[in-house]
Length: 240
Image (cartoon, rainbow, N blue to C red; front, side, top):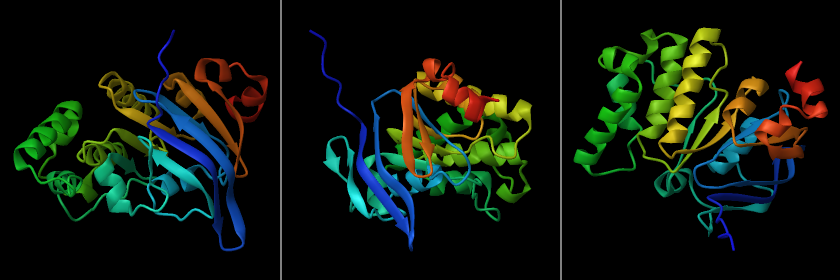
């Protein structure tokens, strides 16, 4: 008899409004420990809103969020980070006038053990050698790809169990995109659970275990990522 898997994150009937506009409607989504799950859809479908709601930056109109079985529907953003959820936001949003190292240390704002923080910082420099080379450089002087690496590394500084990645390939050259996705695959081997929002649906599905398709605020298709790549509906709408 197989063991029953317990979700790391479970979203139940989540609806979100922006003023009079319904951005999400009755979204159900489950992520299990160690998975890479991708959320694909067209611009304006509600993908970033989903991540921002999980991070508790956006309020739910209805529904519930559970993390490790705990109801976090009304948790504050800082509480969510302390519980183990971190986000690398769309557009990177690094602190341009601070150094790479300062940006990374700010990512550990919920932690207090300086020895452990130093060890985590060392791990980020091992995972992102380019950042190690530029540790004293101002973040605003980095290339777009380097800033994306910094945004991911900064999120990892809180030592999350669940990493939310919002459009990590946006605006980057193809060779840099390949580097970013190689890092995502490496994070998976290290046991980091990832929810990936990504405009490049093919690359996202190739890197994920499972996928969800979001259309105008609703989940319309879900399944094993390797199967979704061959789903005619997905191919016609998102894979060209």
